[in-house]
Structure formats: C-alpha cells, structure tokens
Amino acid sequence: MSYWNEKHFQVFETPGLEARMAALTEKVRPKFEELGEQYSAYFSGITGEEFYPHVAKHMRRTVNPPNDSWVAFAPHKRGYKAVPHFQIGLWDSHVFIILAVIYEASGKSAMAERLLESKQLANLPEDMVVSGDHMKPEAHSIGELGKEGVENLLCRLRDVKKGEFVIGRHLQREDADRLTKSQFDELAEKTFDELLPLYSIMLNRQ
Image 1 (cartoon, rainbow, N blue to C red):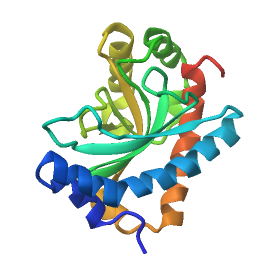
Image 2 (cartoon, rainbow, N blue to C red):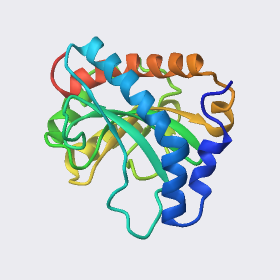
Image 3 (cartoon, helix red, strand yellow):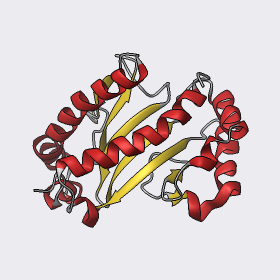
C-alpha cells in the first residue's frame, strides 16, 4: 500500500480555510506526527544532538488556506526557522524532502560563504533540486542549473536579506503514489544522508 496517495494531495484542492484546515488535520497531520517522531530520532542518532519535530500548524492564517504543509526537524525545541533545518512536506504537486536556510536564519552570509568555498555541492547527485524561495513549489535540478546557477543562489543567500537556499528532492504526486512506507523511508534517508555534510558545513562543523 502506498504511503502517500491522492487523498493527501487533494487536501490542497479543498476550498476555504476552515475546510482545508479540517482536511489537513484529519488526513495529512497524522503522517507528519508519525514522521516527526521517526526522523527526529533519526537525526538525533546520526548527529549526536537532540532534534525536535515541528509540525506546521498554520496558526497565523485567517483568510487564505495553506498551499503546502510540512514537518521540520531542528535541534531547537521552540522553533526551527532561525537555523538550518530539514523538512518533509507536501504541495499539491509533490512531496519534498529538503534542507533549508530561510530568511529568518541568522548567520546566513557565513553559511553561504562556507558552501561556496566547499566542494561538497559538486558531489551531490544531479537529480537533487534547489530553490531560492521556500514559499514557492518550483525548484530546478542541480543538473539543469549547473555549477554557476547553484552558486548564484548561494550568492543571493549571502548578499540579499530575503535570500534563501533550499536543497533536496521532490517526489512528484504520481510517483509518490507508487511508494510503500519502506520505499519512501529509503528515499528520505538516502536524501538526508546526502544532505547532512552540507548541514555540517553550514554550521562550520565539517
């Protein structure tokens, strides 16, 4: 049986804030709670630092329904946005498995500089995707962007206050429907294992 299926993606086609939030709470949030427990333990074990899950609650929304949702993982109990963090989440088009530095993060410039100086990005598979905006579903593969395109995103992270850097894998809606829980876990762990060296570089721990 597939771990993600049409009912999960269709949540984001539900009209209206109240109805969509109800559908999200019923159909998607239990998945994020489960993944939150599983992968916070995974990151704690692999890094030696206690990680905490943060399931999106979308509490600030009063009119517009959310177009995506997620569980984030970070070594901070109270929040994750101010530090590099990992996420598993959904848009209506795909599942994302990512490492993100978003605009609230402190020390972004130094993180970007360390990544620019590192050779680690060149070692990543070309099917990994990158983006400069975590609020948009679109991303481009490393293969498409090439070295220069990725470096441009890192320069923006370094130089622009609103700059962000999001990297990981997207699993398209129709492909997600084919994966069992164990197959999804295999993909998620492979992706996180490939991203952890970047995380260490961001935090200057390599």
